[in-house]
Length: 162
Image (cartoon, rainbow, N blue to C red; front, side):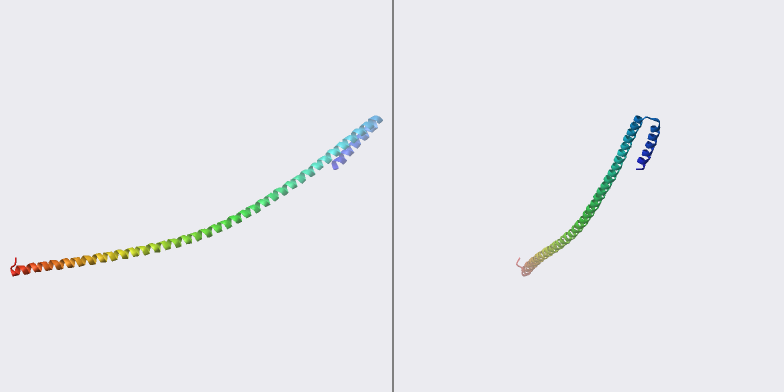
């Protein structure tokens, strides 16, 4: 607005000087030109002010959109982080449960294997004891038979029955 006032005053001064040295037609022509110039300057100033206002409004809208997008991104990141933590906790709990079950199964398998080994060892010891007993019985029987045969042969020899 100040530019319009200054420009208007300058034109009025030029017009005043022009009027003092010109004819009525020249004055009317100069007035018309000054009036047209003042209107053009006023229109351009108004357009510039409207453009500046629109640019400021667009900038404010864009800033608001960017801030809204940033806020949404922060909310999305927080939600994703929360979900990731929950998923990790659930996975850890599942892994611990599975490890405990696997350890229990391994302990059961170890106990079963130890029991089977003990049974096998007992069966082998029984078989060895039976075999040893049979061998002792056979050795005793053989020794008794040999002793009887020897004694009988000695008796026959002593009796002269050869």
